[in-house]
Image (cartoon, rainbow, N blue to C red; front, side):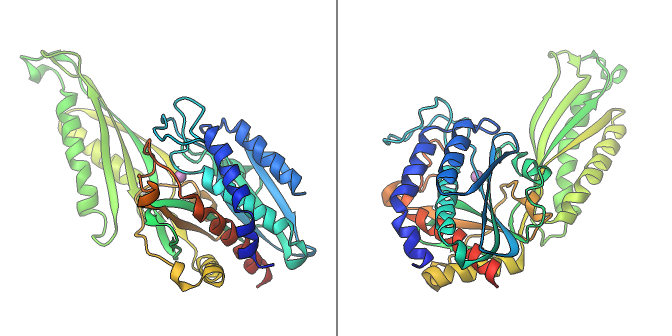
Length: 387
Ligand code: NI
């Protein structure tokens, strides 16, 4: 039986897993019921199961001959959003929803596990299934890495379902696909005084306003014009009342880019600008730069093997185009260590109302695409291990 036919035959089961997971969403590090469901289903398939990274599940399927190791990754966490869809499998957990569609990839990877566990005589080596926790708030991928799950792995693949890409299309290319996403916390310190005598105090609001403006010169004047980058200040908090000069302002923000080099330069550049700006206003500033995730950059060979698996399954027509996105993904941590590719699989269908954006309270998936995700995972693993 071909992988495509096997995936089609599993369609109802994959949808049923997806709906059970969708109805019982859990936020990062709390994926207990989801992890138990995944572990129980893998055990039924005869897959070796270990629990790693607190609520994560690692499955291992060995071929009948020794060989390389490949990893397939799904993320299991939901978001603190109240679901506004009226569907039979609506979230039963108030205020929590699978609004990034991680229920889909989790079910697709279970489907791939079922296909591959029935084909052990068709491949050499080992398939590792990463059902990782906590992608949205970060830490899940690092948890798997710290547990040693990536040791000896030659390639890793992940699929994210994407609502702005039509169902039946898949974007699978080499190079940058998702941006880095880091956090900034800046404290600007001045000296309180009477609002009528500003020269006797040090106005932290004026210094922080200048810092906010000057930080915008990083993208316009320090990053090459052909490189996309973002520096955003999203919170500006300070002051006590109308007639007192402010002694402390807190700024919070984020940086985004697609280059490991630009990302590495952000902390020193930002620190230089905030300190020199603050001192020109007689204030002081300090930076806390909090790394959240690196840029998601697809390895050329892994992307090629995966694209060939896809066209072998469904033909060239399935290859679609999606511009890279400024959102971040903790899959990037695996890619810093192992050649890997992130696939965007279209799940947008206006007639089925599955074209609401990610993280929207009306977000939903076109379930008809799920077998193709399971098939792509399985075919990629077979082709990588047997090449
Ligand atoms: Ni997501």
